[in-house]
Image (cartoon, rainbow, N blue to C red):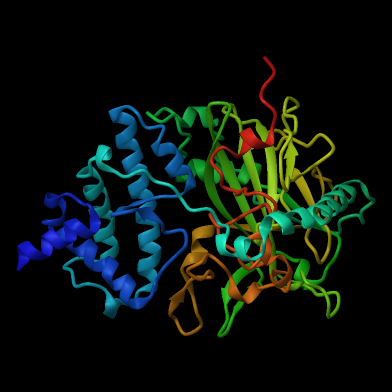
Length: 457
């Protein structure tokens, strides 16, 4: 019976016989079955098909094709297993103890032991080609006659682009409240100094990550005291998520390839309780709103550019810092580019001013002195994937499609032919489609190469 069961595990997972014949392999497979029986899933917890111990996202899928030497391939396996470990331990928090497979050690201890062991037993050459599906709905575009509707939407898209560009130039009310991170602590490493590894990938440890996040974090400026314009912390109510003090930025690290180099990116996500509706016909207002501010660093620590979206993937804007960056000619629905030179947060704190209620970025400037400042804390964005309810059970802010159902917007009824599922709904990292015409994702691994013109010879 044991032999038959082991053979079935090999066929179902692709793991080597030696790995699955071990207690680690069998326990890990039982854990996956327990997640499935409990209906626990996560849109970020993607794995290599047949290899549930190897996590994947758009960046790792790209990086797999760059791993040519044995050392690079072994590092890729370690990175992929580390991604799986992070995903699995978040899923595990949502699985009630009574539904976990029996073991003689705590489940989180077994995860930490088993995933590296399973990765070490994996043959990189045997892995399948890996792609991450795009975040667009093919059936919506087919039924919505996308070629026609995209053409009809071109005028509205251009009008939106012109409106957002005009807001950058229009007078704005002076900010009355600033939200600032704690002062930076500890030595600040240059990303190049963190890339002494086979894949030349900047990989800060926990202390270095904290120092980088604190140093480059933006100061959020608002000109209004309404509670829905105050960034807060996500908490799960009995029926839906709430945003309440203290002010918080949720963070994660990401990487991108630009002009042949792997670059480190710092992501900061701020949440607001709502975008208040301006009337019964307002398609864009509703519960929850936010801003994602991303900092892309050169190898020496200079900021190359910032970019931002709202958690719906909407309102994609780019703020070049490096004077050599020029907007590329792009087809489709392109981001809005900031028209003035932008401060480099490597040398001076950046102030990001938001328009009240709609939370659009309207100014990016050096930090203004003399205004009241409130500190905001830093929390891992992954904490939103395992968040406690009032009754003590653990859930995710996001459903298995990566969406926050409580934040649905009426605009989804008019924009569905353009292929973005539930347009306007807040969603989790890795699920941000940022264009209605054409296709683009916030986490495209080579996004800067499409945003900016090639370097001058």
